[in-house]
Amino acid sequence: MRRMSASVAGAALVLGAAGCSAGDPDPAPTAAPVSIPAEDTCGAFGDVLTILNNADVAWREGRFADSEMSGARILAARVQARIVAEPGSEIADALARMQEAVQPADSGFSLRGDFTSAEWREAQDDFFLACDAEGFPPATQAWTGG
Image (cartoon, rainbow, N blue to C red; front, side):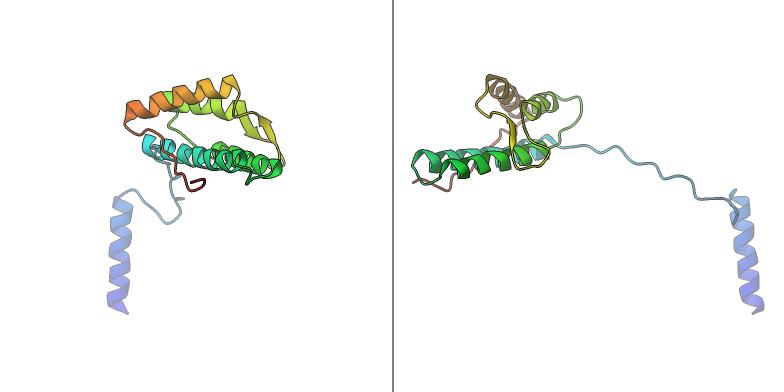
């Protein structure tokens, strides 16, 4: 028991010398800035394009009813709304404009805006240019229609 008491006393001296005491609260943790890679943002937008392009092919070929096409557009808007970008970047600016132009309604089951609007298309063009400049052009995957 004496050895343990001596160890505890030694630790208390070391902590005291370091400016710590048992009564001091832990310092508030500081969050490190989070960087959002362009590759992640541009890749995530590829998912939006994949949903829209495959649904459009199925709808044009008569394999999707209007209600299914509407559902695909709503899903694409929900996916788009969840994409994040590095603040202050050209990618973030274009993404914000796309998210403003087309967004899911509060319920998540309807749509505000139109993916074919000039506002969304112009923002999409800027987004593509910004992603391409970073070396990560958005890509889509076709799985239907052919």
